[in-house]
Length: 127
Image: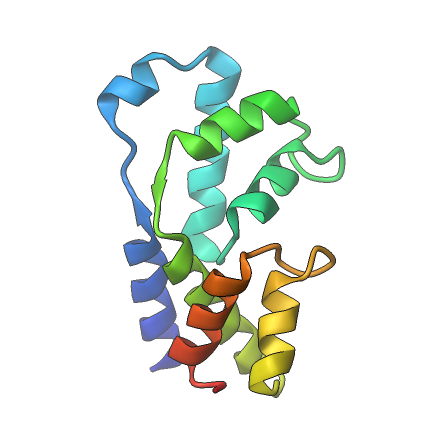
């Protein structure tokens, strides 16, 4: 059942980008959008974490500006992404409410805002 819930959360967390926004993107930015959508289809990401994944030399190595434009062109419910991330963490180990919020909001962790991390931890049942 957990997998079904996770699939639902991820699909709710990513909404399609508008046609008007997509038309103004460069080729590399459109490719970064495709990569971002792929990542969001199987895992929760914060805005910051997704940009980092797309622009990191250890990730997709897109230009940081292109990665940022691509991510910002999407309609993503970052609160629901935080729920998906929180559920992923809880499926592999236990966390206190405070510990999970720290993990989700830390710069060394997922990079969600404290508000998004708090929402995710509460919705996932850690608090």
